[in-house]
Length: 181
Ligand code: IMP
Ligand code: MG
Image (tube, rainbow, N blue to C red; front, side, top):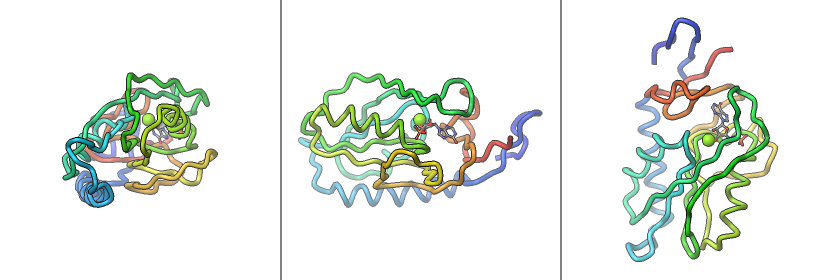
């Protein structure tokens, strides 16, 4: 990733495309081992949290070697800036009763978004829910959620790239970086 993405905003590189690819391969292996009991009659269900996790999920699903299916849920907590609104809007059209669920998220920050998604999905009687996040910011956690799988731990900074945005920008950057303020 170039340091200067455009003329006004600097991005400090954190994880290269190659580092991300290698880490995802490890996570995909771990998931495939842990859910080795999945069958084509009873596949693991990946629920991808849109929009930020779309690239992560696309790469992750190609490293998973057990039967799995993919569906999506839309969550938004940020308005137009860097401060979480504390108000999570969740939209989905899922039927998950009896399914083993892997929630695929981009970043866990305060934990509010994933906690609310998990609470909503739990009412739909899945067999289990596990969380897989590309990035974890444990320093800023306010709601006690634990990811079974996490790619990288990051400091309390604003991260962009590899699907993750600031005001809908930077999702297409192949690597992850910190938006300098
Ligand atoms: P939480 O509800 O505070 O855990 O925030 C989770 C959501 O906020 C994530 O799914 C992201 O979409 C967004 N978010 C949190 N931190 C960042 C960041 O550093 N960059 C971009 N989006 C972020
Ligand atoms: Mg998100």
